[in-house]
Image 1 (tube, one colour):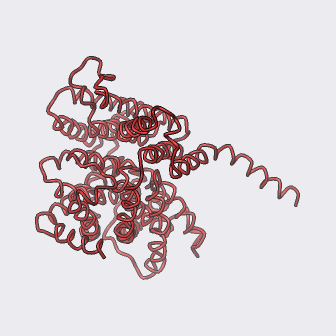
Image 2 (cartoon, helix red, strand yellow):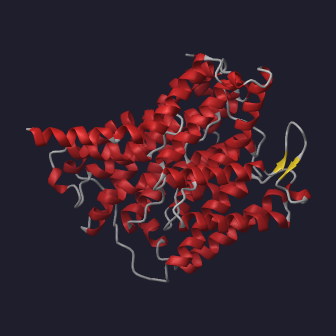
Image 3 (tube, helix red, strand yellow):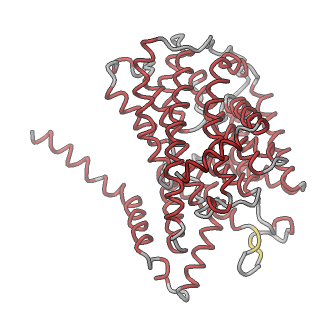
Length: 501
């Protein structure tokens, strides 16, 4: 009941005219940026982060809630219309959604995606209301060894499931940890990797790293691969769903959150694995299996609902433990930090009004997303007419202005483009970007927790594993690391069974 009372107070904050307007602006801006080719929710949030600098914390967070869900919807729109997933979780949507668009059913695909986002976000945010305070209460009892173990799990899990190989994932993580070392050591005051520059003594701002790796890196990558092709976008018409479409989609919409939220809520969960599981589940349960691969609407409705619910689950981990498990959550964590707010187990006590206002605004933003974007889908399709040279030139300009606004120093622009070149190189050699961002944000915190645990144990390594919780987490880490080796024995046994039969 206490959570319900605080949520009602949060709605009182979120539904004021000013905050309601900011939520609507956030939804429109997030969709506007996210609907452009090659730009996903993470880049949309990173690009629009500087827009919130002049706002109060609660107003900025409410606007970010709108940007968050708007960017997610925009990413699914590009997957359906252009077969260009904005992020890895939108890959599954592109499989069936783009085929539907090619068959002239793009309007139905967009409607199924939009309503799927709505259903998944509503159910996922409701679960967030119920579970986040419980998780925060349990997290208060965790010590330095426990937090360090959870961060190690986040590092290992993210680097293991992303990218084409684990080596590339760990290489990306190492890059992020190295960037996170730049600046003064918090405990000794010794400078690290500053190369004698006083401007780098405070470290590299997470916003610059996120914008550089996502926006600048992606722009340079697209510019190096694509030429100007002014082809006409696929017409979508007015989105609508017939009775047959509704009969085929309502069950996938409800099944999606059951798969997506748990994966999002665990550290390093994310939306990639659950969306593929949702697609496989819908293909197995559907009576129209023969349509899969050529435009089955269940293959859009289920994964989109799953991805939206997974995003809500991600916020549980981010708000209660301060662990961003997706690229978008990592950028949102940077938004908290720019106001001097550190998500964690005490956040619900110290910043209660802000947190519950943010959670209430998630409900508001979800409704606004559906109301505003269903009739505006044809408008978003016209944005795809922008020639790509102008599009990405505008992105570079916006990214530069945002980076300069962080501290007003030219060195930030230089750092931005150096990190942008690094992001370009990472894409060139297949290194995933998320582990690097995770390393920048969690690296300093993991170092601090590790040194704190070692201080309490007088330098003994046993201080890192002196609790039942930390031992359990390290066992999970061992399973994640050893699973590829264990999995090699399973196919052999399965392959041997038919031979003997």
